[in-house]
Length: 326
Image 1 (cartoon, helix red, strand yellow):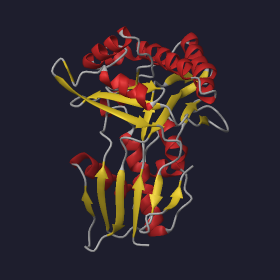
Image 2: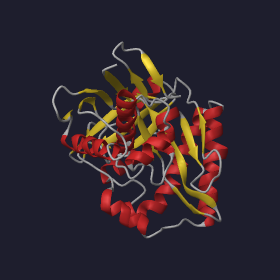
Image 3: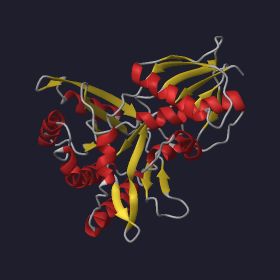
Image 4: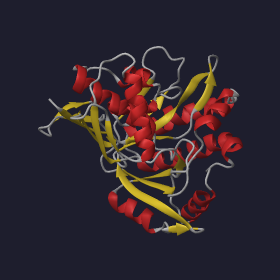
């Protein structure tokens, strides 16, 4: 085996629940995995004496950093890494975590034969999953996920498959990014904490409304619950991001969609991207028809994606999945 292809989906996260050891749900929350956008990466042994990375500037920088971290404890030869599809960073899609874990997984399998490391173990090697477990668990399993927080012993994340017919409309300003880096670290470093009442409200929505709605394939209940969860969490995070939705452009879009009766819009992470669930492909296309290509002069990216109910995939030269994390 001389090369591996790695493919991931994207992670949506609808607001951390900032609990504490007393109330639980410390860095808990809800999220789900979608197929698009995703990372498509080929990893192979390099013919040259040094690594060769073909990707955007930011993706290249991150891949080089992951390789450096891996080489602190593993022997890797020079590698050629080619990225053919990317997830935009800092837009609420969890691109950094999916890339780092995916590169680590592919490199350690190709070079050292390590096939059975979990995403949690891989994340520890590359410095990811500092707070939420949604991205790491989603990398391995896909689906709709309820993370009950860092203080839970045993199964921290509960998972259920999303109905195949459901789609997700992803909207973001092409030029926009959410809070990240030093600003994010500083905000969490101040140890903001939700009230017991807010923790209780969000956790009940997560477990009693949303998880049950997905399990029972009750779309209207899911859309209404997701909108309520997003708005409720967003009011708490408004002190850091300016409003329930971090982007003024997205606020305008959501207001118009809600005016015409489209439910379910919720921001992912710090945004600016949002997700709107759809009951079918036709429903998703109807939602898209209500969204302008530009708003207040800002170009919008609009994507209809399927849910991803399985983990990321690693494929060998034969192009047959040799390891699908499920």
